[in-house]
Image (cartoon, rainbow over all chains, first blue to last red):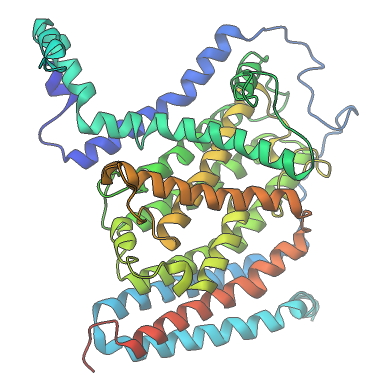
Length: 135
Length: 356
């Protein structure tokens, strides 16, 4: 009876192994936590619960500061994510169907040339974005 | 001659049926794979060994000795002492943090890092979840692993974690793409996404030789993805205190550290599988194939890990502009160049069995 639960027959052996492993990994953090609950002291105080600001009394911030000067990188990330997916699909296609090999090579060459051009233009991207925003 | 197994068989037969089933389960292949090798026990022990190894190595680089006293032999028990120290610290949740996220994210980080081992082969058949798309599954889990980090930084609602969080977001944006492209190069030349078949495809030449550029790109993205020096700007101690981990202490910090080390090691194993020929190696006399295969792959992964640990000792930390420039300006074009060289060579060599 127990064995039916411990090694279900309808399930693929590999999948069952994965599920067992997943279970073990999920169990790990609670075990750490439980040990900590058992042996850690509990003497809360307000000073301990203060946020760390190098020993100063924490100064609350109303708005969250996001470093806007790196915003251009976020924009080119979107372009490159598409590039990467295209490259991956092209490669899969090249593996599957032979006649698209040359075509795939041309697409890859175009993307490569584009990325090299982009990397030469990157240093001035910020200024140009700012100029575009101003005009 | 007495059969050495006989007493155990008798013992097994004398057990009640319930316990017999349990013994059978403990001896079954899924349980051994999931719990012992290459599963939970192995990855945990390996993580601990790596921490000790890195400390010793780092100490030698800076002309120190490193852990020495606890455990007599080379301070081998220092890690246990450290673990007990972290576990026995008070669990402090600072004021104003997002409590559920703050507590859950270290756990999620650890689970995701350990899950990476499910898709890594440690020898023919020594894999928890053999899959035709193993490489994609590994990349999927690896791509999810920044999520708990960013959310942990966000949940802390504090200044240093926030700086660390925005840094790691920018850094990972920049290095996910070249990593993916380097892996695409591997797929192109081995013609499969199955990690076991990728190893078998490297019988003649390991891919580190065939795709030098791809290997270099992979190693640099490995450092960046796992926040190792010189790419440790998200934690940058001495600069932004401890980055996104600043508010964490005790058991949460232990989980985060364990997660980070498991992730580095998983990536080292991936590097050994993809570029160094995995478990392929000269046979060791007196050792059966099933044991020599894990030996070779662990040795290769540890060589990669040594390289990673060495860099920590010899390189200063990069600034964020340098990190972003390296990722966007050099690694992505290089990864594309690697891809096109691989495609070109396979076209010329006619390695892809195709008629035009």
